[in-house]
Amino acid sequence: MQHVTIQPKLINTIADVTPTVLAAMARTSDPRLKQIMDSLVRHLHAFIIETKPTEEEFEGGLRWLTALGHHTNESNNEVVLAADVVGASTLIDLINNDGMQGETMSALLGPFYRGQAPECVSGECIARSETPGPTLYFKGRVTGVGGAPIEGAKLDVWQASPVGLYENQDAGQDDFNLRGVFRTDADGSFNFVSVKPAGYPIPVDGPVGDLLRAQHRHPMRPAHVHFIVSAPGHKTLVTQIFSDTDDALATDVVFGAKTQIIGDFVEHTEPHPDYPGAPLPFYTCAYQFKLVEGESSYPVPPISGKKS
Ligand code: BEZ
Ligand code: FE
Image (cartoon, rainbow, N blue to C red; front, side, top):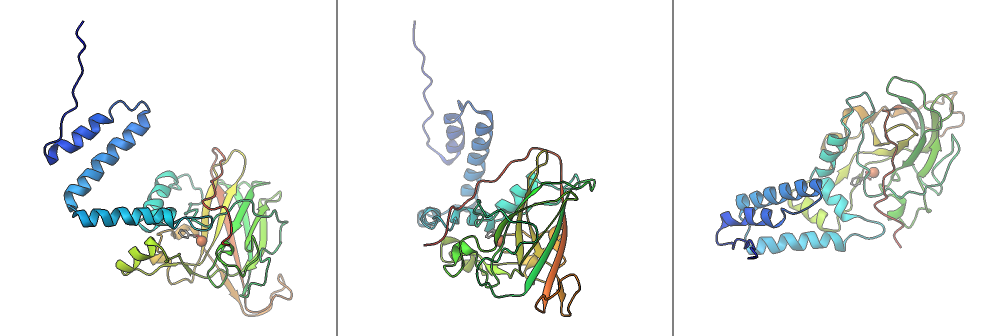
């Protein structure tokens, strides 16, 4: 019997490239991988044909991508940062978490989530080392979308210091400063004490910073506190609560701020009976987190530790 082999087609023109590459990938057995790679190749080739990079530009682009890896370490994930500043992370977020069932909207996990933060009791202060700045009293509730309290929900909280650095970026802060894990009580409530977050620049000492400078963009994120809210039988919420007075809300360098997750950070310049002895001025913020029913999962931390 004669053995018939189908000869791959040789590439002789621009028009030959895309169909030949698609044919080479045609036996991919995982249908989702095939769908994603086929689409990626079609769009990538269309982008190249539209922009017609020179060889120098192509090499420069590859060097920029390589530098993302070289600037990624245990305290910084430049690859995540790159996905954030081009809006890719926010698009993925909105596609997968559209808030259409009345749940609180999500926001980027960001590159500074560490995991393994200390378990705290309700009302505990997460400033573990000297952290100058106005005190913030944060009061929250976790409910279902219909308002029923969720007891025992877990809240993983982290934020930057008032000088705009997460503890893992700053040798001056104790390990896990401004990070903590809280649990809701029977009526879904939790509260903690911290310092009022300030806006801060994302790291600009790597290839992402080079890109922002070339685009004449500022590197600022509006002030926020991060939360991962999880409870059995409910879809885990990864979000940020933003300070309502921050100037950079609409120009967030990573496109993370959304109207629904802007908190009311109230400034108190007079003593208040609920906060006896609080140094003036101090701030309060109350927020209700609404979880939709679904599968509880947990994100993988993009970084593992502290800058040495
Ligand atoms: C953050 O909020 O921690 C963050 C998110 C995206 C990029 C950089 C920082
Ligand atoms: Fe942040």
